[in-house]
Amino acid sequence: MILSGWALLVVLLAVMWALQMYLAYRQARAFMSEVRRLRGLGRTAIGVSSQSRIKRRVYVALAVGPDGRVVQAVKISGLTVWARPRMVDKLRGRPLDELTTDDGSELARAAAMAARSLREATPHDVSEVEEVNRSG
Image (cartoon, rainbow, N blue to C red; front, side):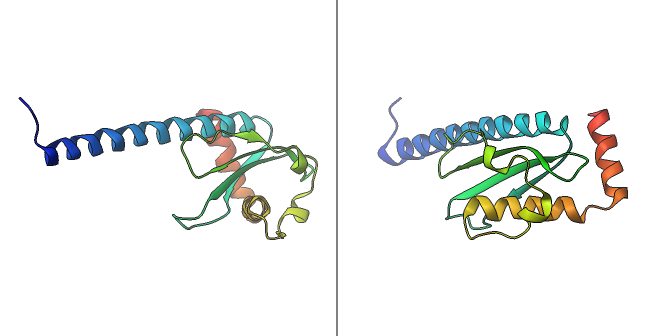
């Protein structure tokens, strides 16, 4: 059975869409694997630089120790599903208060969002998160 031109186009688009969804799934799993690793280092939050679907986004995950300084940071950025998580050494050791204002860069904007989230977390929120981390 030979498919007509339109049917072939629809099948090809469906296959390409399924491949893109699979690659996006793998990318998300890789980033969340890094986030789970960070959870073992301290309180963790994720920030994103842009809400736009068109512009490039940067996701940053911060792990903060009891002294309020960043223990480790991971980012993922790019327009394609080929982007992979990378360590951000220049954020390591910086206090949260220093990260809550951004300098206009995508990385700083995402780090500021994560830092604000960590600063605004109440002790009740922190204990819930720690309990979830221990159980899952």
